Image 1 (cartoon, rainbow, N blue to C red):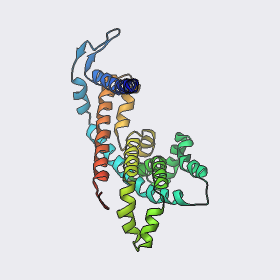
Image 2: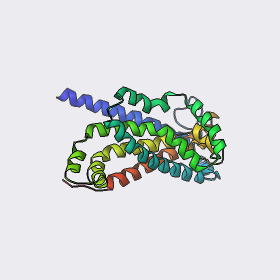
Image 3: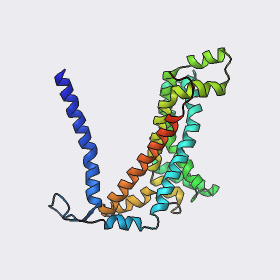
Length: 264
């Protein structure tokens, strides 16, 4: 028993180091004015990187656009995924393996091929450079993540509760809010948070479909990282992480805070 507890302690410590160490490096890079090899720590500390980041004209629009798009994509994806996952979970015609292949198909196909072909279609529909176009392409790419989680949640839930409620005279709306929603809340919360994170992280879809008119945090972050400007890249990474954590917390509060059904 003691060996098991020690093993768990070391595993927890190792996991904590894996999480904290990259964050520490990002923070050191973001406050360093000079960090040359072979120095272990920055030789000169300064906050000029954050000042330069805040003076960037596209910084606040990028933050607001990232949050707005991610929340919109999360809402649209969950609205689509809930009924679709319920249908595929309880249908009897298609095998589970075929259903999973259909769900993962957008992730199996090369992303650049999907995005470039979608750009041609969106140009014809005049959706490039619009929030609606970006939300559509993000929803297409995020839907498999939500579908897989909600599909397993529906399979674990089964049809027994809803069939019993129907037998007792409950309508579909009451069954959803009084039975399905409370029992599926953990799966809905998890899928919503995952969709939010994936949408926030999208670079190529936003770049191609946005046409450079709509700027998000990844569009500002990656050029600095590719050009070796690690200070600005690290500061943007920390802001990106903070925005993602804020969005996840809000979703957790909104979905987990809605109390419906019977409390035990």
